[in-house]
Image 1 (tube, rainbow, N blue to C red):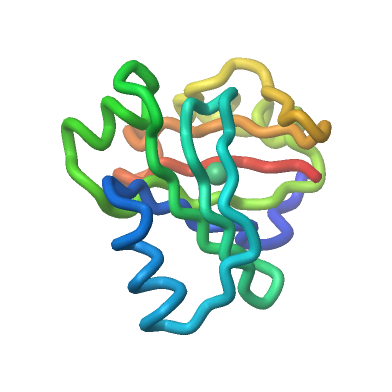
Image 2 (image 1 turned 90 degrees about the vertical axis):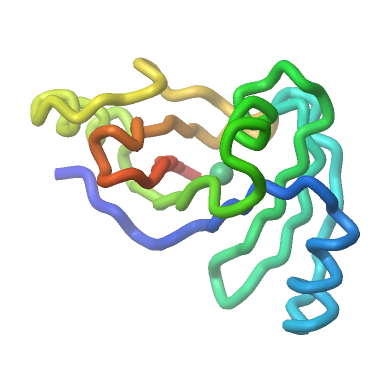
Amino acid sequence: MPKIKAINHVAVVVDDMQKSLSFWRDALGIRLHELRDVPAEKSQVAFLPLAGSEVELVLPTTDDSGIAKYLAKRGPGMHHICLEVDDIEGMMTQLKARNIRLINDEPRATADGKKYAFIHPESTGGVLVELYQI
Ligand code: CO
């Protein structure tokens, strides 16, 4: 059985990175590890690691990505929660067998070889869920 191991990160979509950092970094005092452009996701992402997990602030850098459309439609706020899994293919098979709607039929790979896939909010009670295998 595939197993969920941890909450890997929580992602927040933002419309103003400096304003968001003034809350998450400056007011809360969470260390900003890295602020990086992620061209593959057409986003700028701030990584704020915290006790084995991470808060990620995501700012769309174009108007045509999925996350840009999400921001335009719903405004800034919670975007997704990411769960680390030990066997992403196995978990996706298990979810499909339960008629859980997946956004990605196959796992996608990050530049550094991690696998990820998204589960549709329709099947999760309104929360976009990302699965991540490191
Ligand atoms: Co994510």
